[in-house]
Image (cartoon, rainbow, N blue to C red):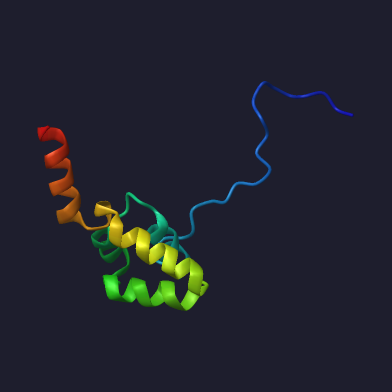
Length: 92
C-alpha cells in the first residue's frame, strides 16, 4: 500500500470543458447557470429555440423536463432578465 502524497483528496476523474461550438459544448453551456442564451448564440450562432431542440434531441425526457424547468425559472439565462435582477438586488 502506498503512502498518501498530500493533504488534498485525489480526484478520480476530471471532465474537461467540451470543445466550443460543438453540440456537447452547447449542452454543457445550456446546463450552466451563468451562461446566457445570448452568449451561446454569440459563440455558436444557435438561437434559444435551436438550443431547446438540441437539448430535446440529446437528453432523456426527464432530464429535458428538469432542464427546461430550471432554465425557465432562472433569470440568469436571459441577459435582460439578469441585468434587471442585478439592478434590483444591488438597489436593495
